Length: 119
Image 1: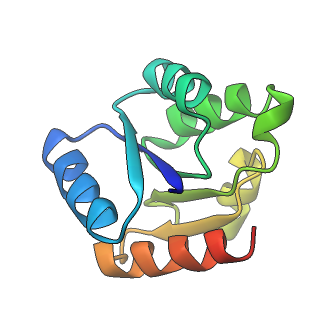
Image 2: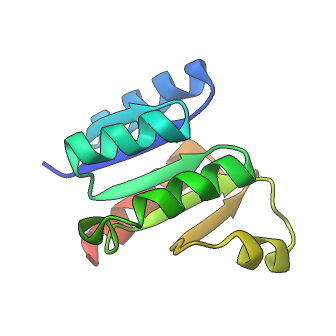
């Protein structure tokens, strides 16, 4: 079973992510901040990471995760309010996809499935 790590700082959304991804047959790891995300990744070795944290906190967590050689190939989807592609590139630390806040749970789930099908 493929594992998805969801890094989300809103408890209600964590529950929604777990329900949505588990309903699609994924094992879901969760974290509510960068520190717990690194711990969850080390313990669980996810196949994909979905990040919904403020820009600098989320970027720092992914940068730290990328320090581990085994994590370099894990696709990362970043969900946030960046609308300016230049700002996204400035914070980019090996992100595979960026979705601004016009996303839906269904859209993210479908994109996650696509990413995992190609890895």
